[in-house]
Every structure is written in C-alpha cells, then in structure tokens.
Image 1 (spheres, rainbow, N blue to C red):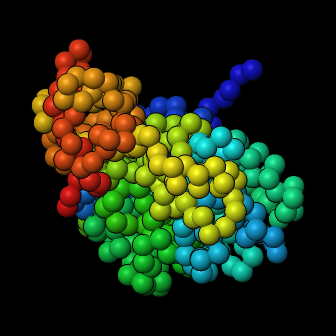
Image 2: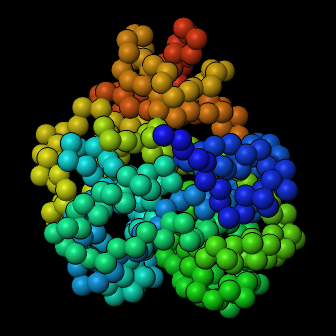
Length: 365
C-alpha cells in the first residue's frame, strides 16, 4: 500500500520562501527557512509565524455533543463557556493516551476538537466508534482548514491592524470568531505551543494565502519571519510541553505524564475507574524535565541513571536549548527520583553526564 505525502495549502509558498521541506506526520512540512537557532530566537524575542495546517479538526454538534466529549476526553468540558478552549486528552482502555487535543466550545451544542496531525485517522475512528451510543453529529473538517500560529511577544501588535477584534481581550485559552484580514469567520485563538504568547488563526483553505500574506505584511515592522518545525520543537521543549509519540503515547498514563490537572474524576470517561485507582495507589514512574550540567545533547531513547549509575528511566525528548545554551530534555524516571533538584546522569556515548531534574518550564523567562 503506497502512502502519498499530503501537502498543506501553502506548500508552494513555503518552497518559494526557501524552506527545507521534510515529511512529517504524513505531510510535506517546512522544517526550517533559515536556521533553527535564528527562528527560535525570533519567536522568543519578537514574532514568528508557523504553518501548522497539518493539524486535525473535528466538529461535534447536537444535543449529545457534550455527552460524547465528556466520555472520550479526560478533562471536564462542561466547564467551558462559548469562546473558551481547553487542553485535554483521549484516554485509551489500557491506561494510556490515544492523543492529546484542544476542545473549543463554538456555540451551545457545538464544539471543535483539534488533534495531532499524525493521529487524525486514528482519532477520527476512535471518536466515531464511541459515538455509536451518543449519536452526536460529527464532521471531519481537517482537509478544509489551514492553521497559522503567530507566536512571540509582538504577536498581538503585529496582528491588531488586521482585525477590529481587540486582541488584548482574548485571554489565554480563549478565542473569538471575527473578520480578519478581510476574511469573515476566522477563529482567533489565544493558544500556542511555544510559551512565547500569541495566537492561532484558523481559516478556510481558500483564504489561506490571503491571510498568510496579510500577516507577513502586517508583521513586517516587527521583523516577523516564517518559522519551521525545528524551532517549534525546541520552543515547546523549553516549556516542557508534551509531544505525542515522544513524551506521551498509547502506553503512558496521563497521571504519569504530569497531566493529572486535565484528568477530572468528577465524571465518568473511558478507563476513568482504572485511572482513579492508579491515582489512589500512586504512580511508579513520572515524566520530568531536566537540564544538563555537562556538554552533551540528550536524545530520545538515551538512558537516565541515578548518581550510582543505575538505570532509572529513559529520555523521551531532548535538544540543545537555544535560549540557555544547555542540553535539556524530558523523560520518565522512577517516582522516587522525580523531585526537582534531584541529581541524575544522562548516558551519552557511554558516559554518564551530570544533570538535574527541574521544575517546568525549563526556560524561566
């Protein structure tokens, strides 16, 4: 069976901008335009724009929409008001995670679920399967929507000329639907994966190029640059944000991953009984962030050891932090070694390099 790599609507725009394109999550995606370091700094210091149109979007509507979402998601979506978004995950039946996602409350009885690109088909089948008992109205609009993340301290100033919607009024994890760059019904969301502040802009594919060009033009005076997936990864790692497939997957429980705050036992959801039991009995391993004190770059799969050199876990994500100039990473360790300040070693080329476990985010502004 042959898989063709999908292209985002603005594929040609990225190629013209000189992006290095790579296959990622089934899509041809820009990994960098200049250098990861330069792009990372642009987002931390001013403003950058990412094309993350590979992400998936599902609409859930009707009188049973909330019931379905409450059952498949770990967080409590009944707390959402229209115009609010919520981070959540789909627990599986075995104690792991099908995916992590954001739930948007668009209207009474209407929600949008935003899922990871690599999991679109799997998630769609999962939600459909569990919808049999609820019969909510489902629509997969992933192929019709482009998504731009405009991130950095200057994001609001760069975007404000494009809309009458006051961007300062859109708080973190809130959104507005407004005219933007002359295009009606654009979702302007106070979310992002960088910890640098900013917005995510959802727009229909037919308006994607117009909106992208308008953002690039409006952001010119702030030095806006297109940013690739390379910098997206270093930015999220400095914040300690999980990446599905690395730090969380079908075998990691939300409690082990430090996602207890999105796991609400005030309602029944898939596998909630077992997760509740796990919470009461206590977890045996925990996802932690760490900072290296010796020169070396931690990589996924590297062994984490205690001060005696005994293996206590594995690195799930690692990089050289552009903001700090040090090796940083995330990984699972035995619970007794998970406290901030704990000295550990990361095995890099048969050497145990010294590191400490740090409270997230790893990069403190």
